[in-house]
Length: 471
Ligand code: NAD
Image (tube, rainbow, N blue to C red; front, side, top):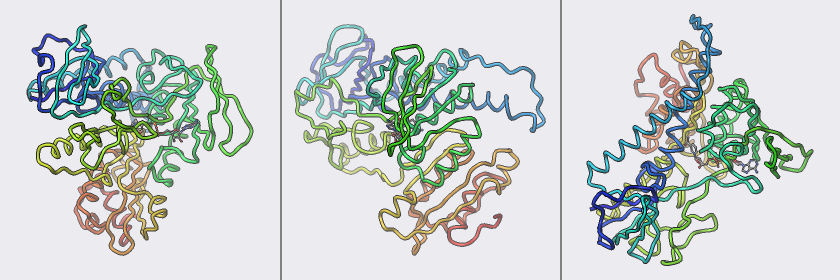
């Protein structure tokens, strides 16, 4: 049997392994695969990350649209009121049903589930502090660590998840802040900033770099989404660094200055969202008992088969290398189990899509222009704007574009970048193309249903090797 031991609070009355009984595989960690100390399965993504934020993004978008975008569609609405408590309830209902779904899948697949906090007692033994009190321990021939990540704190600011919040507080505020300052214009900053901006907060995003979107987003796409988010009311201070925070009074004060030296300024906010990245979470795992090593960013060091220097201990997800994405961890989990059981496994790190769920969405896969330039690759570019796509026009939702980057000689697709409605769904086609080594001509010669947004994808591909028809 497989034992999944989340650092979680879980009842012991389920016929767990008796102390130190040996199992074929023990998994410690949350994320998409296992272990959780909050008493519900699904890790950060399902409980306080991807899933609750998407519920709020969807419903805040609907609210914003009903407020501002119905008249020109021939829909007259009466008084529109926000019921934040019910919006939060809808989010919780979605999260709860999904966590229960995982519990059901565990049972169906005979995965044992221990609620407690795990730590290595020795190389093969994991001691667990049970949530409901008491202790147990499990021996594993093989052990996976999938403990994920946590928000990087901002020095000088104390996270109370009310006034100074991380993404966890940002999905649970009880009232709409008047003034919100977001430190960090990466994915979390822009998604959660969008939610509260749509619900009425005055939102300013302070970003150290010259562009928003975090690492990986193509500069042209980043500029494009910034303009659209500004139209929605979000404010940006780029090339600006938060140097100091003071949260001793009700209003939080942030000292900011231009990244390259410049006039300092103090920003005030009733809520500050700290979104400056996440760091691996491996605290309390008892590494001192087994000598596992982390690098200078706290990531567990592994080989290409996800093995630590103790080969029966493997690591997947946010607590090791690569982008901190749930679907990346999922691929790694499958590959690591395959390495264990079949001696082969595969993750194509060049074909892991990224999606930012603002409106419009931003999605990309493969390399961006800056990366190709740096690598000295000769490439060609093809773009197509949604303003020339019939479906986007009829939906009255036509901000954005599709952009292909392909090898100048072979036409092989190197990167796909989309800002536009449903970009997050559309990127699946780009990911498949990249995985299969397709050329832009392969896409351009494939029939795409009319009228769909996906035609913009086809036409951008056509623009890369030839010419788009409708632009
Ligand atoms: P991020 O790394 O995407 O962005 C952090 C931003 O903060 C960077 O742009 C950085 O330049 C800026 N920054 C750092 N210090 C600063 C300072 N002192 N002043 C101003 N700006 C500063 O990190 P995030 O947005 O916190 O997200 C964390 C992780 O979670 C990322 O790996 C992200 O991909 C992942 N995530 C993904 C999704 C999604 O896939 N939709 C959603 C949420 C989070």
